[in-house]
Amino acid sequence: MEIEPGGPSLKRVKLAAVDCREESQAPTPASPATEAAVPDPTATERTAQPPPVDRISNLPDPILGEIVSLLRTKQGARTQVLSTRWRHIWRSAPLNLDCRRLPDDHDKLGRFVSRVISTHPGPGRRFRVPAYCLQDRAATVDAWLRSPALHGLHELDFCHVYNYRPRTVLPLAPPPASAFRFSATLRVVTIGRCLLPDSTVQGLHLPQLKQLGLERVSISEAMLSYLIARCPALECLLIYYILGLRCARINSSILRSIGVRLRRGSGHDADEHQFRELVIENAPCLERLLRVDILDGLLVTVGAAPKLATLGSLYGEMYLNSTVIQRLPNDSLTTVVGAVKVLAVDIFCLDIKTTLQVLRCFPCLEKLYIQQSISGDLNLWKRKHQSVIKCLELRLKTVIMRSYRGIRAQINFATFFILNAKVLELMTFEVDAEHYESYY
Image 1 (cartoon, rainbow, N blue to C red):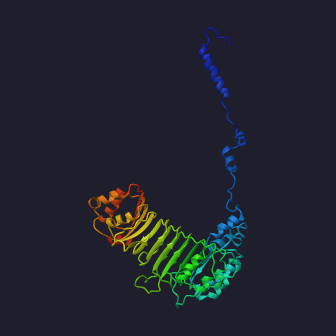
Image 2: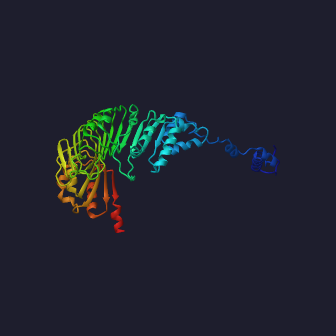
Image 3: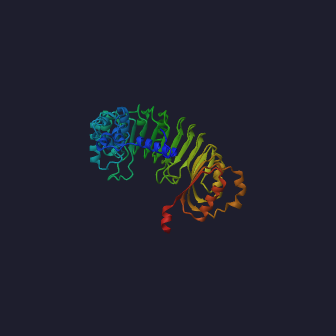
């Protein structure tokens, strides 16, 4: 391109060339037909999303059966109406027949259980009926237990219904003989309001049983020891309102947990044939000893239990490793239990002196539950217990105070742990609701 003299300058020509180039590269406006031909990328993404997938229904039948067998009886049966995929799952899954949440009406309960057992082909997973059925309709319960739907049963529970008030009090009756036809497969057994005669216990052998609960059961001392010996896999034992013996002696090489509670009205003023003493002679694997009711006056003696790590609750008379812990908090505590890490203690009059005695006996304590009835003095610990605190190495990580009302003595008591437990991680106060409402 030649530039004539007097024409536009070279700079203007360059700028004009740049403008022309940009106009040639600029997109031309599309016509309506062109806009309709170009697809919307967002619309394509929306239509490309796959529909939601029912991943639960795609699981194999055995896994679905395990899920259904963990549901309540009515909920498990209702899964049949979800779809054709689920229609056969409930009948092919192990039967979970739990009648605890059903009405106490005998006729309705009987019809429901009979209908379920006649509909389900088995095998059985759990069979739980109220214990009063053993007295009111023993023949019907026996027929239920003989049904093929319960073949291979894992859990058998004759549960005690506490709000049930029978019109006539019937004597305790032994469980039907058919109840123990599952001896080879039972893993959890709870027997409530039954008489266990010697002839019944002597014929039992439960090789896979891991949990045994005896609630309001009449059994002799010798037969209780024999029953424990006939359960070589037993790990958890609950003795709840047991009748027919005064002392329960425990000898087990694999038992890990024991829970115990006396019958109301038992204790030192009770009949000599009522249960009021627990003796753990040899339990090398015992880890938990729990007293459900700390005000029952039970005498507990622990001999050989080197792995005992959870103890609750410390109250009344207790012997640990041949040394007495008696009538807390009136008497001083002298024994040392090094393995206990979790302790629940009931202190009638809350004070730091008694608590220091407890901590001396349990030097490895990490978690402490404190239940108090009344508070003592103001718990001014700074001067009075300074020398004792220096001798203790508090390893407490958790302290839980129950019946807390926020009074000065309790605040000082809590401050003692906050300042002296060097590794304390959590301190919880459970408020006494009745006392709180009386003020507000």
